[in-house]
Length: 339
Ligand SMILES: [Zn+2]
Image 1 (cartoon, protein in one colour):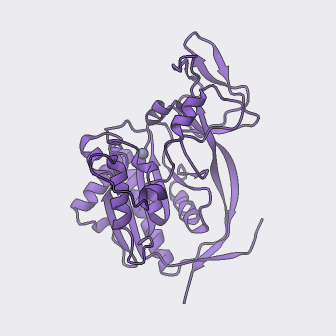
Image 2 (cartoon, rainbow, N blue to C red):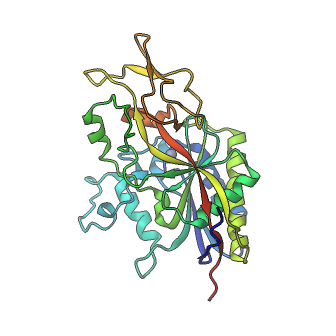
Image 3 (cartoon, protein in one colour):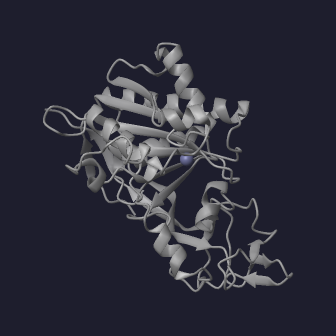
């Protein structure tokens, strides 16, 4: 239904693209490395300044997700604003790095210096390309994503719940994991690197194994990123986005693997769900297959759309998948704020 509301948005003056937030996700690592090597010409536009950065250089060098803790969960005030001395030997490397990034991308007034942040990731799940943004993302990000969908119809939009990602347990019936797993997972805050910008999105590309590259995925990600930059440039030059209805996948939480009394994994993702990211999962559908051959059905009340199915990086937290609800939302018309 038309709202006829018109939103306004400031010109984007600064933009940052980060890769290697997870050091073994090589798609973003090599996009950023090559942009830095080539003087960033491909990502420069006239109306704003573009920065490119390897977010976690030590993890990237070692081709591991992180050195001590997940950098993509450390952008939270207790890490960034704490007056506690972050001594080299005592403080996890990624917390030091979060502080470095935070102070580097701050202006003199202590505000975020980057208007728009794009953080590049890849997943082992069979997701295709998708944007992840906050559930409270404004019309600017939603319009940019929708514009890119015109060119790349397979590109999806996922909206995150606020708060802790690994600790976001699906509040339906599927709860096989122990409380301890959840408590342990809740140590990881969700605040990601894209939060260094006033607004930020994550671009996920899948499926890609950690520590590997794939030409099709690399080239597609490059086209999506440069396409976003082109849209931002056009918006800065007065392009208005018309009201539109878009499809989004809103995160409902994570489903954890079933475990036995000792906390050992007792089942795998069922064959019908494996590699079926974004496809509907109905109540009663097979979800897991236990090692003893028993099918465990999905016990939720409503149809859901799983994503990050069998993501390798989530295995240590016993997360089998994230589930989402497919929704249509109306994004109001948007135009540039003029003084
Ligand atoms: Zn990642």
